[in-house]
Length: 83
Image 1: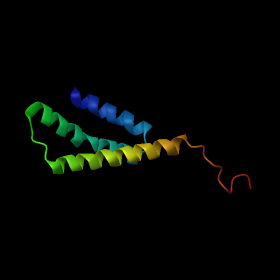
Image 2: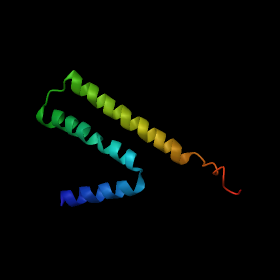
Image 3: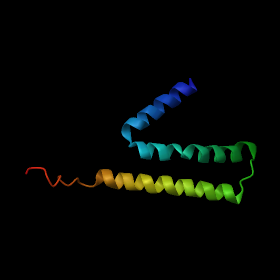
Image 4: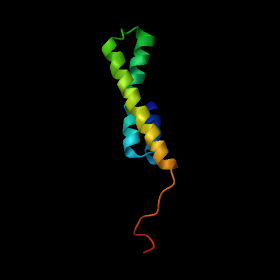
């Protein structure tokens, strides 16, 4: 049941977002897993893990912000349109 729900959710996201944004967003899975393992089983978080997590979050955030700006900006007509 959980697998079916996860596949349905991922398909829904894939339909509403560009492929690159979806791919980068899916990179957040290890970040969530790391936080969960630290909270649930007291896994030690090393500085290297923190740095990697920070880089992933920064990359995903920058991509999503850029994607949002691209979609919200008005599209200019093609130079050859109407010629």
